[in-house]
Length: 419
Image (cartoon, rainbow, N blue to C red):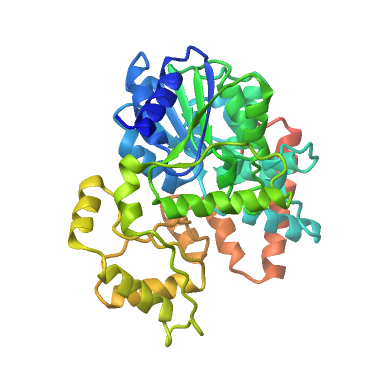
């Protein structure tokens, strides 16, 4: 056994043997979190349906489900909360038992506000994500009840409100695992803290990998607060088993320079080491990082696509076999728009097998509204989607009437919206 293998084994055993009901695992990319999760779940008492693994977007959930579904229920946070809303009437707070999840509902309700108030709509979802005290959120929830539908964030908000107010008890599990905590917002952080009241919990994340702060009001301050708060026992997984040494060294160089420039104030200090037993051979084979500069990139001058195709063609056959055996892609391409579609088109047109990963969203358009109405001609949601395609003046007349109707029903103490 190498010294690195002994150090990794010791780090894992510290987690596995700990009796603490609240554990925080700080681990960089490729540190072996999923393998550790699997071991913790195997050791947890009870049946698999009494263990829970949560993350926050579908692509991450799919990866975890592939590895862990045998040992636990695996869900996104909003998927888990949707299940709670369907099962627990007191959390629905005005929704019927037949409510639906409609991605994009929040944008419709913001549009309602502009039709009714003739002013800019509040940032409802931001207020929910940041747990702001807001006089506007009751009107959002009333519209949501009227459509008998929820969006992703507001379903979590409803559950959080209901549990925090004591309308329902927080479910207990033999073990709860939370992944990618650095990308959680205040609402999600608050919900996880409620969940941790009745269950042993293991939270994993890395503030260096906070990717969504500009998109979902997330903050790595939440994982840093757990790290420094004293309620969670802290563990580290020190090695990167995914990357060759040159990549690990480059990451550490960037971090060192950023710290010198005072750009990483508050960062969790953590080891990030090369792991020769897993990546030593690759490190010897690929000792450098290639920086390729192109003069132009567009559909009819697709130099990125051509270069990537040529690089793929140079991959030895034995590496294809290793990738297939271990269930990971031969090449991982990370690109932003507008370049990613161009690269995909080039590779697809030249016969390369490609899997494009992105979270899908249901379209809100006239065809979608008609599809809802075919199933339920009285659906408030279906008719509202139809109105979104109409001219503003025409739509505003009808949407204003729905506002009057909701006000009348609220004044009568209605618990739900009926057609």
